[in-house]
Image 1 (cartoon, rainbow, N blue to C red):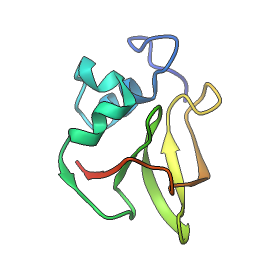
Image 2 (cartoon, rainbow, N blue to C red; image 1 turned 90 degrees about the horizontal axis):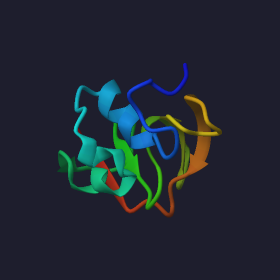
Image 3 (cartoon, rainbow, N blue to C red; image 1 turned 90 degrees about the vertical axis):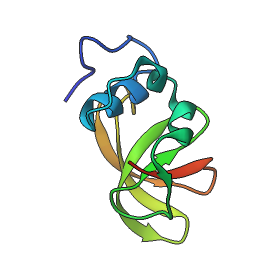
Image 4 (tube, rainbow, N blue to C red; image 1 turned 60 degrees about the vertical axis):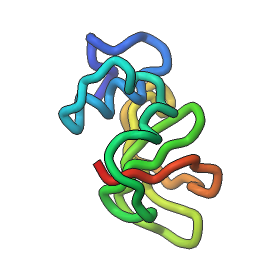
Length: 94
């Protein structure tokens, strides 16, 4: 899976996630704006994880402060990979 054509060529993780969850609001193209969507949540499968400059969806927890996250614009592609969630600024139930 690649960057959707309607998403900007750079910093497209928020745009991709918005399309993926049915919320194609341009304000959500800025990753940190996801920190105000939905309701606060605890880290877990299906929860949106927000960093200052990236956003994705937790697929599964792999340990304390670690999760497999599905996100766009990860190495300029859509992929799942294990990441630290310790520096996340928000976890949201959307």
